Amino acid sequence: MSAVLEEILSGGVRLAAPLLLASAGELVSERAGVLNLSVEGMMLTGAFAGAAGAMVTGSAVAGVACALVAGLLVALIQAILSVTLRADQIVTGITANALALGATTYGARLLFTDGSSLEGFAALPIPVLSEIPLIGPALFEQTALGYLAFAVAAALAFGLSRRFTWGLAIDAVGEDTLTADRCGLPVRLIRYAAVLLTGATAGLAGADLALAEVHAFSDNITGGVGYLAVVAVIAGRWRAWPTVLACLFFGVAQALQFAAPAVGLHVPAPLLVTIPYVIALLAVSGLVGRSRAPSGLTVPFARTA
View 1 (tube, one colour):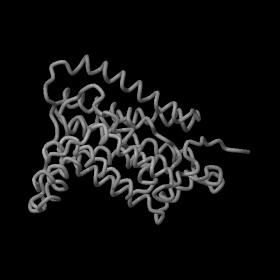
View 2: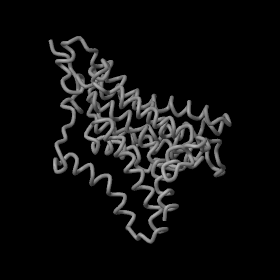
View 3: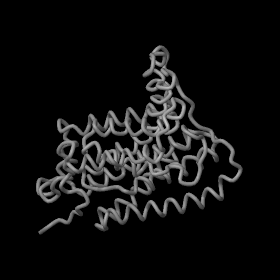
View 4: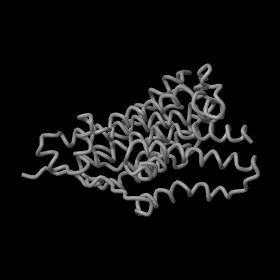
């Protein structure tokens, strides 16, 4: 039984790594007032670019660099549309996801035809710590990208604290753009930076899926993880550490889908899939405590005379 529990925890933390990366950037973006539904497209594009880069160069590190650039390019388009042109953030996000799915599916038909495995990242156990029962394999047998995911999540959670100037600036822009602008804050620049940060973390999340999880690229490899990152931010009530906990919980819920039969639990897979979304609905409904999104979320900024 303990072996099965250890497997569930290890699988859950591993599955939570790309979700942590994507939701960390999404949290910053939403706190700045920009809803990035296109995080799914950023992840998918990053996964494709990372796999293509690793295949062409034979280097997983080069693949990660390609994934990072690809995520930033999609984020730049999203920022131009939503921040500069003030287009509807929901419409642009869904459109970007549809385009990314079509483009990467077509690209996969051209590049990944032999089904061969890609150069990727192997697990890097930390001596002594990885031998701790239950939590050791889960926390200290990650790949380099897995450790990076937790480092990025911790850094952003710490940096979003209002003890820091940039955390205050992000919250000010996300709550009231006009007041922030009158106080001298560069509203558009902050929002651009937040969206680009999401692109960077989402690109890395896509690389984690392709190069650390399966060492290959397949059609729609993200499988909705980008949308789940948005759900994690909502379930975490737009706060850093609750969002991290939501990601870990969602990862364990995903791992349970594969491990449940081993312990004799015949839980319908669709039921486990819906758990994150039910939690998000409870979070925004107020049934489990007060939850309030940033006042300026999805509200375009236009300077008044």
